[in-house]
Image (tube, rainbow, N blue to C red; front, side, top):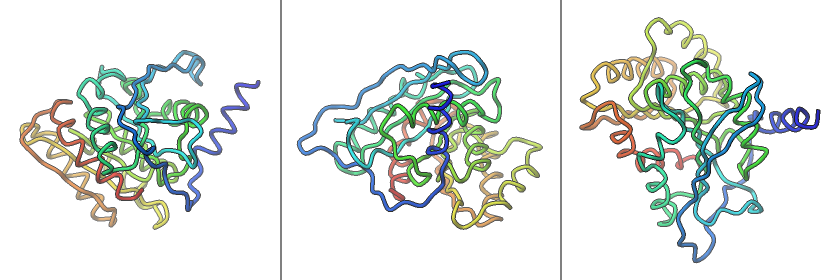
Amino acid sequence: MKLLLTFLLSAIITLCGCNSTLEPATMEPGCASPGTLLNGEIAETARGYPYRFMVYLPPCYTPETEPGYPVIYFVPGRSSGPAAWFNAGINQTADALILAGEVPPFIMVASENTDSDPLAAEIYSDLIPYITANYNTLANRRYRAVAGGSLGGIAAYRLALQYPDTFSSAGIFGSGLVGGEDEQVKTWLAALTPENQPRFFFNVGEQDPLMLTRGRVLAALLNEYDVPSEFVVGEGAHTYEYWASNMATYFRWVAEDW
């Protein structure tokens, strides 16, 4: 019962789309140490089995800092796990930008894949409340983003459009609109308001022609509904290494709203 109450209370805080005048945490003076990677597990989820994740805590992270840190949720592609994004080095890119003072310090959480969870229900219902209850995040949509690669990119746009009061932006890497989902996406887009409209960032390689086409289809659909998006295309294939090579651009883009 105690665990249930904790999750219900944290869910109310986490899923709140309320506006806030809070500013994100700033760097500790003299901080020079890199961020920390930790493995985590939610012992009990709505589906009744454990859920694994990894978390990146920024340089000189402190649980007591107020008002807290922005957070980006990263979803891996098909058959990948929470380590896939960090194995590609996105934490090192974050360290460099944070320590250089280019972006505020922020937390990253890498989820399990969504192979058997196409609408990413576990991320929304289990992972986000757990992270909010256990880490020093800013529980406000302005400071919460979701990003994913390949199948994870599909999960990212579905999360951002289903729950625009929860996410302020979505990063779509090597991915785009699923064929046949046009009408559903239009329904989600039509329900957006100026107050909860998310931004979208696309990064697809020129050697990834199918996803490049699908990404452009989704971007065009967003444009029809005046939803802002950024589209980055470069020399690259359908790999974490290529997506990670554009991560500095993505982090700077996300931080524009922080």
